[in-house]
Length: 293
Image 1 (cartoon, rainbow, N blue to C red):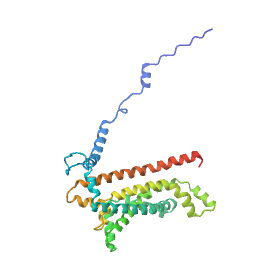
Image 2: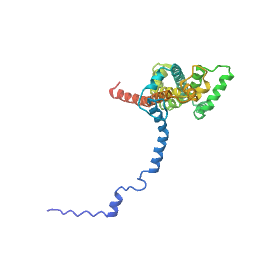
Image 3: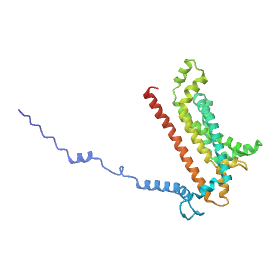
Image 4: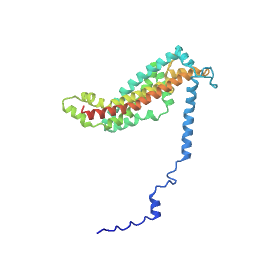
């Protein structure tokens, strides 16, 4: 005996229409916002693109492009003043990077481990340089050195840059330190390690990706910094950013376009490296866990 299956009731058209996804106002793309965003990026990056384009100009012109050439890059390679300033900027960036990372790591560990009101107050004070205009910091640093009778030189630029960069390192590392499990460090001390050995062998290796990323970021920020370097530098040797500003006051030369393009390319590469380092260490950590190392 065969059973007859009752026909399924027809779905009303209104119900079917409701089931279909409809592109109403919520599904439309905000064309006005897209246009504003495109205009913003055009105004932001178009002048930079023009500088990069005219750095390859074969003629000494800042308005007419007459063909591609490496003339101004060769001129920069033979300019002793610019090369001297480049070396000065590299030295300042390396010293500021090392000093700010060392002090920033210690400050981040202290702020996270300190549970008193004094620690909370120190954390708020640490954020002040991040919200203070850089020109105020530059003028204050210059007045401090003048008041102490310290002549402005490359050393004063290094001290000012280290002081200004500590907050960036601390902010980056503080969240990483707070995410660490303190029981791992306590287990190391239970196994016979001292407090310093536990920090050196357990905590610092866990902080290494964030430390490297913050170091690369500080190097890029200090190398491109102008305001703080302008107020704290001496007569000679000057950082590259200050030297470029001094040269622009007497007229913009095409060599400056080449220098600016190289600085921009280097900064982009360093920032990309700072963003890539944590991901690289994360992948290696995951592979080590899978392999049982």
